[in-house]
Image 1 (cartoon, rainbow, N blue to C red):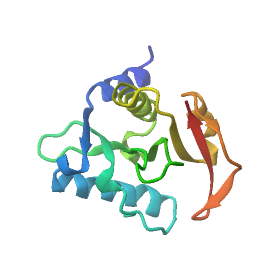
Image 2 (image 1 turned 90 degrees about the vertical axis):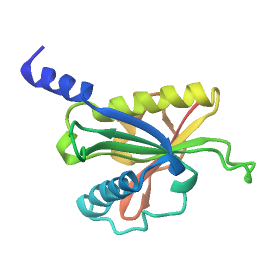
Image 3 (image 1 turned 180 degrees about the horizontal axis):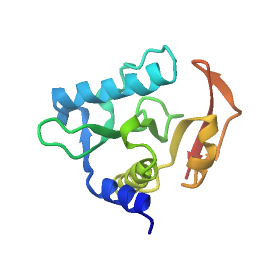
Length: 167
C-alpha cells in the first residue's frame, strides 16, 4: 500500500459516524450540517437554491466527523427520507444531499458513506426500494452501488441531474 493510500485509510478509520433523526441532532450539528450543505451546494457549485426545504425534520441524517477535540470538522453528510405515507405513489426511500467537504475529498469517503447508509437502510427497512436524484456526472459512482437511471437527464438549478433507483 502506498503512503497516500495508507493516509486515506487512516483518515477514514478516524471518522466519527453519527446516524440521527432530526430531533436527536444537537443545535451545533444542525448548524454544521447546514453550513456544509451551503458551502458545497451553493458556494462551490455556484447554485442559488433553497436548501432548507422542510424535509430535514422528518429525515435521518448521516454525519461523518473528522478527528478533533472541541469542535470536530464535518467530513461528510447525507440525509435519508422515508416514503411519504400520504402518497401511495411515493414508496421509495430517498437518499439526498450527499456531500464530502473539501478537506476530506479523495479518501474514499463518498464510498464509505454510501456503503454505510445502504447497510443501515437495508437493516431498518428491508426490501424498500431506494431512489436518489444524482448529478448526472455521478451516474457511474451511484451505478457501482446498484443504482440505475429511471429518468432522462434534466436540468435542476442549472445542473444536469438524473433520477436513479436501486431495488
